[in-house]
Length: 280
Image (cartoon, helix red, strand yellow):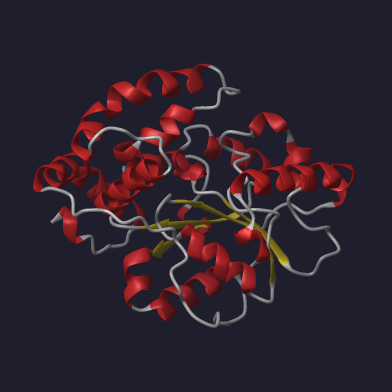
Protein backbone atom coordinates (compact mmCIF):
# COMPACT_ATOMS: atom_id res chain seq x y z
CA UNK A 1 0.00 0.00 0.00
CA UNK A 2 1.46 3.36 -1.09
CA UNK A 3 0.34 5.03 2.14
CA UNK A 4 2.63 2.75 4.17
CA UNK A 5 5.70 4.31 2.53
CA UNK A 6 4.68 7.87 3.43
CA UNK A 7 6.32 9.25 6.63
CA UNK A 8 3.87 9.52 9.53
CA UNK A 9 4.00 13.32 9.79
CA UNK A 10 3.02 13.65 6.12
CA UNK A 11 0.37 10.95 6.46
CA UNK A 12 -1.35 12.99 9.15
CA UNK A 13 -1.23 16.15 7.07
CA UNK A 14 -2.64 14.29 4.10
CA UNK A 15 -5.42 12.80 6.22
CA UNK A 16 -6.36 16.23 7.60
CA UNK A 17 -6.45 17.68 4.10
CA UNK A 18 -8.64 14.85 2.82
CA UNK A 19 -11.10 15.22 5.70
CA UNK A 20 -11.30 18.96 5.14
CA UNK A 21 -11.98 18.45 1.44
CA UNK A 22 -14.86 16.10 2.28
CA UNK A 23 -16.52 18.32 4.88
CA UNK A 24 -18.88 20.02 2.37
CA UNK A 25 -20.33 16.59 1.48
CA UNK A 26 -20.46 15.23 5.04
CA UNK A 27 -24.27 15.23 5.17
CA UNK A 28 -24.29 12.94 2.13
CA UNK A 29 -22.00 10.40 3.74
CA UNK A 30 -23.02 7.25 5.56
CA UNK A 31 -22.20 6.45 9.16
CA UNK A 32 -20.44 3.15 9.94
CA UNK A 33 -22.47 -0.04 10.16
CA UNK A 34 -19.93 -1.62 12.50
CA UNK A 35 -17.13 -0.42 14.76
CA UNK A 36 -14.03 -2.28 15.92
CA UNK A 37 -13.70 -0.77 19.41
CA UNK A 38 -10.69 -2.63 20.79
CA UNK A 39 -8.43 -3.75 22.16
CA UNK A 40 -5.15 -1.92 21.56
CA UNK A 41 -2.31 -4.38 20.74
CA UNK A 42 -4.96 -7.05 20.18
CA UNK A 43 -4.76 -7.60 16.43
CA UNK A 44 -6.84 -4.65 15.25
CA UNK A 45 -4.22 -3.61 12.67
CA UNK A 46 -4.52 -7.03 11.05
CA UNK A 47 -8.32 -6.93 11.20
CA UNK A 48 -8.25 -3.52 9.54
CA UNK A 49 -6.20 -4.91 6.64
CA UNK A 50 -8.41 -7.97 6.17
CA UNK A 51 -11.68 -6.04 6.35
CA UNK A 52 -10.45 -3.38 3.93
CA UNK A 53 -9.77 -6.07 1.35
CA UNK A 54 -13.24 -7.64 1.63
CA UNK A 55 -15.25 -6.91 -1.54
CA UNK A 56 -18.30 -5.81 0.47
CA UNK A 57 -16.43 -3.34 2.69
CA UNK A 58 -15.35 0.22 1.98
CA UNK A 59 -12.45 1.36 4.16
CA UNK A 60 -12.61 4.63 6.14
CA UNK A 61 -10.08 7.34 5.38
CA UNK A 62 -7.86 5.97 8.13
CA UNK A 63 -7.63 3.54 11.02
CA UNK A 64 -8.16 5.05 14.47
CA UNK A 65 -10.45 7.96 13.69
CA UNK A 66 -10.70 8.53 17.45
CA UNK A 67 -13.95 10.47 17.25
CA UNK A 68 -15.63 8.93 20.31
CA UNK A 69 -12.41 9.22 22.32
CA UNK A 70 -10.13 12.24 21.82
CA UNK A 71 -11.69 14.04 18.83
CA UNK A 72 -15.35 14.21 19.85
CA UNK A 73 -15.20 17.98 19.92
CA UNK A 74 -14.62 18.10 16.16
CA UNK A 75 -18.28 17.33 15.57
CA UNK A 76 -20.39 14.87 13.61
CA UNK A 77 -19.67 16.41 10.20
CA UNK A 78 -15.95 15.84 10.79
CA UNK A 79 -16.65 12.20 11.69
CA UNK A 80 -18.89 11.60 8.67
CA UNK A 81 -16.19 12.96 6.40
CA UNK A 82 -14.16 9.78 6.99
CA UNK A 83 -16.76 7.53 5.35
CA UNK A 84 -18.10 6.87 1.83
CA UNK A 85 -21.10 8.56 0.26
CA UNK A 86 -24.48 7.00 0.92
CA UNK A 87 -24.64 5.90 -2.71
CA UNK A 88 -21.74 3.48 -2.15
CA UNK A 89 -22.92 -0.12 -2.03
CA UNK A 90 -20.17 -1.36 0.27
CA UNK A 91 -20.40 -1.41 4.06
CA UNK A 92 -18.59 1.28 6.06
CA UNK A 93 -16.88 0.90 9.40
CA UNK A 94 -14.65 2.50 12.03
CA UNK A 95 -11.65 0.76 13.62
CA UNK A 96 -10.44 2.61 16.72
CA UNK A 97 -9.15 0.54 19.66
CA UNK A 98 -9.05 3.61 21.93
CA UNK A 99 -12.83 3.45 22.17
CA UNK A 100 -12.91 0.36 24.38
CA UNK A 101 -10.99 1.99 27.23
CA UNK A 102 -12.15 5.62 26.99
CA UNK A 103 -14.70 6.13 29.78
CA UNK A 104 -16.98 8.43 27.73
CA UNK A 105 -16.88 6.50 24.44
CA UNK A 106 -19.78 4.06 25.07
CA UNK A 107 -22.34 6.80 25.69
CA UNK A 108 -21.04 8.95 22.83
CA UNK A 109 -21.12 6.01 20.44
CA UNK A 110 -24.64 5.00 21.43
CA UNK A 111 -25.93 8.55 21.02
CA UNK A 112 -24.92 8.58 17.34
CA UNK A 113 -24.92 4.84 16.52
CA UNK A 114 -27.51 3.11 18.71
CA UNK A 115 -27.89 0.12 16.37
CA UNK A 116 -24.26 -0.35 15.35
CA UNK A 117 -22.49 -3.71 15.62
CA UNK A 118 -19.37 -3.73 17.79
CA UNK A 119 -16.26 -5.88 17.53
CA UNK A 120 -13.81 -6.44 20.39
CA UNK A 121 -10.59 -8.28 19.53
CA UNK A 122 -9.27 -9.65 22.81
CA UNK A 123 -5.85 -11.00 23.70
CA UNK A 124 -4.26 -12.42 26.84
CA UNK A 125 -4.49 -9.30 29.05
CA UNK A 126 -0.98 -9.79 30.45
CA UNK A 127 0.54 -10.12 26.98
CA UNK A 128 -1.49 -7.10 25.86
CA UNK A 129 -0.22 -4.91 28.72
CA UNK A 130 3.40 -5.88 28.08
CA UNK A 131 3.00 -5.27 24.34
CA UNK A 132 1.59 -1.79 24.99
CA UNK A 133 4.51 -1.00 27.29
CA UNK A 134 7.06 -1.95 24.62
CA UNK A 135 5.09 -0.04 22.00
CA UNK A 136 5.31 3.10 24.13
CA UNK A 137 9.03 2.45 24.60
CA UNK A 138 9.55 2.15 20.84
CA UNK A 139 7.71 5.44 20.28
CA UNK A 140 9.93 7.19 22.81
CA UNK A 141 7.17 7.96 25.35
CA UNK A 142 8.18 5.49 28.06
CA UNK A 143 11.44 5.73 30.00
CA UNK A 144 10.73 3.53 33.03
CA UNK A 145 11.48 -0.17 33.31
CA UNK A 146 8.44 -2.44 32.92
CA UNK A 147 7.84 -3.18 36.60
CA UNK A 148 8.43 0.44 37.60
CA UNK A 149 5.97 1.60 34.92
CA UNK A 150 3.33 -0.84 36.13
CA UNK A 151 3.74 0.29 39.73
CA UNK A 152 3.72 3.97 38.77
CA UNK A 153 0.61 3.70 36.58
CA UNK A 154 -2.11 4.67 39.11
CA UNK A 155 -0.36 7.91 40.05
CA UNK A 156 0.65 8.71 36.46
CA UNK A 157 -2.84 8.44 34.99
CA UNK A 158 -5.02 9.65 37.88
CA UNK A 159 -5.00 13.38 37.12
CA UNK A 160 -5.57 12.90 33.39
CA UNK A 161 -8.46 10.50 33.97
CA UNK A 162 -10.05 12.89 36.46
CA UNK A 163 -9.68 15.72 33.96
CA UNK A 164 -11.54 13.89 31.20
CA UNK A 165 -14.37 13.02 33.57
CA UNK A 166 -14.63 16.68 34.58
CA UNK A 167 -14.31 18.12 31.07
CA UNK A 168 -15.43 16.02 28.09
CA UNK A 169 -13.29 18.17 25.77
CA UNK A 170 -10.10 17.17 27.55
CA UNK A 171 -7.70 15.00 25.52
CA UNK A 172 -6.35 12.37 27.97
CA UNK A 173 -2.97 11.78 26.32
CA UNK A 174 -1.13 10.67 29.45
CA UNK A 175 -3.94 8.32 30.45
CA UNK A 176 -4.05 6.66 27.02
CA UNK A 177 -0.27 6.23 26.80
CA UNK A 178 0.47 4.77 30.21
CA UNK A 179 -2.68 2.82 31.19
CA UNK A 180 -1.07 -0.61 30.74
CA UNK A 181 -3.00 -2.37 33.48
CA UNK A 182 -6.16 -0.30 33.09
CA UNK A 183 -6.50 -1.19 29.39
CA UNK A 184 -6.21 -4.87 30.25
CA UNK A 185 -9.13 -4.76 32.68
CA UNK A 186 -11.56 -6.04 30.08
CA UNK A 187 -14.31 -6.68 32.60
CA UNK A 188 -14.33 -3.11 33.89
CA UNK A 189 -14.37 -1.71 30.36
CA UNK A 190 -16.98 -4.16 29.11
CA UNK A 191 -19.36 -3.24 31.91
CA UNK A 192 -19.41 0.36 30.62
CA UNK A 193 -20.28 -0.78 27.10
CA UNK A 194 -22.99 -3.13 28.38
CA UNK A 195 -24.67 -0.14 30.00
CA UNK A 196 -25.46 1.01 26.45
CA UNK A 197 -25.39 -2.07 24.20
CA UNK A 198 -26.64 -5.63 24.57
CA UNK A 199 -24.34 -8.62 24.20
CA UNK A 200 -26.10 -9.56 20.96
CA UNK A 201 -24.64 -6.38 19.42
CA UNK A 202 -21.06 -7.30 20.34
CA UNK A 203 -18.70 -9.87 18.80
CA UNK A 204 -15.55 -11.06 20.58
CA UNK A 205 -12.69 -11.93 18.28
CA UNK A 206 -10.23 -14.27 20.01
CA UNK A 207 -6.72 -13.17 19.00
CA UNK A 208 -4.97 -16.29 20.39
CA UNK A 209 -7.32 -18.69 18.63
CA UNK A 210 -7.08 -16.68 15.44
CA UNK A 211 -3.27 -16.80 15.56
CA UNK A 212 -3.34 -20.60 15.98
CA UNK A 213 -6.10 -21.25 13.41
CA UNK A 214 -7.32 -18.13 11.55
CA UNK A 215 -10.26 -19.38 9.50
CA UNK A 216 -12.83 -20.28 12.21
CA UNK A 217 -12.48 -16.94 14.00
CA UNK A 218 -12.52 -15.02 10.72
CA UNK A 219 -15.62 -16.80 9.42
CA UNK A 220 -17.42 -16.26 12.72
CA UNK A 221 -16.69 -12.53 12.44
CA UNK A 222 -18.01 -12.36 8.88
CA UNK A 223 -21.24 -14.08 9.91
CA UNK A 224 -21.74 -11.60 12.74
CA UNK A 225 -21.18 -8.66 10.38
CA UNK A 226 -23.46 -10.11 7.69
CA UNK A 227 -20.63 -10.25 5.14
CA UNK A 228 -20.36 -13.04 2.61
CA UNK A 229 -17.65 -15.69 3.10
CA UNK A 230 -14.32 -14.51 1.73
CA UNK A 231 -10.69 -15.03 2.70
CA UNK A 232 -7.78 -12.62 2.26
CA UNK A 233 -4.80 -13.88 0.22
CA UNK A 234 -3.07 -14.69 3.51
CA UNK A 235 -3.60 -14.12 7.22
CA UNK A 236 -0.35 -12.28 7.79
CA UNK A 237 -0.02 -10.57 11.17
CA UNK A 238 -0.01 -6.82 10.41
CA UNK A 239 0.15 -5.74 14.06
CA UNK A 240 3.39 -3.76 14.54
CA UNK A 241 5.84 -5.79 16.61
CA UNK A 242 8.76 -4.64 18.70
CA UNK A 243 11.87 -6.60 19.63
CA UNK A 244 11.73 -7.07 23.36
CA UNK A 245 13.27 -9.18 26.11
CA UNK A 246 11.14 -11.67 27.97
CA UNK A 247 9.50 -9.98 30.99
CA UNK A 248 10.80 -10.99 34.37
CA UNK A 249 8.77 -13.15 36.68
CA UNK A 250 8.08 -10.30 39.08
CA UNK A 251 6.33 -8.26 36.37
CA UNK A 252 4.24 -11.28 35.36
CA UNK A 253 3.29 -11.92 38.98
CA UNK A 254 2.35 -8.26 39.44
CA UNK A 255 0.10 -8.31 36.37
CA UNK A 256 -1.46 -11.64 37.32
CA UNK A 257 -2.39 -10.28 40.75
CA UNK A 258 -3.86 -7.14 39.18
CA UNK A 259 -5.79 -8.78 36.33
CA UNK A 260 -6.85 -12.33 37.25
CA UNK A 261 -10.07 -11.38 39.03
CA UNK A 262 -11.12 -8.95 36.30
CA UNK A 263 -10.39 -11.52 33.56
CA UNK A 264 -12.62 -14.07 35.29
CA UNK A 265 -15.35 -11.43 35.62
CA UNK A 266 -15.05 -10.58 31.93
CA UNK A 267 -15.40 -14.19 30.79
CA UNK A 268 -18.43 -14.72 33.02
CA UNK A 269 -19.94 -11.47 31.76
CA UNK A 270 -19.66 -12.36 28.07
CA UNK A 271 -20.38 -16.08 28.50
CA UNK A 272 -17.23 -17.26 26.77
CA UNK A 273 -13.98 -18.86 27.93
CA UNK A 274 -10.63 -17.64 26.65
CA UNK A 275 -7.30 -19.46 26.90
CA UNK A 276 -4.93 -17.00 28.52
CA UNK A 277 -2.06 -19.08 29.92
CA UNK A 278 -0.21 -16.21 31.59
CA UNK A 279 -3.16 -15.75 33.94
CA UNK A 280 -3.04 -19.34 35.19
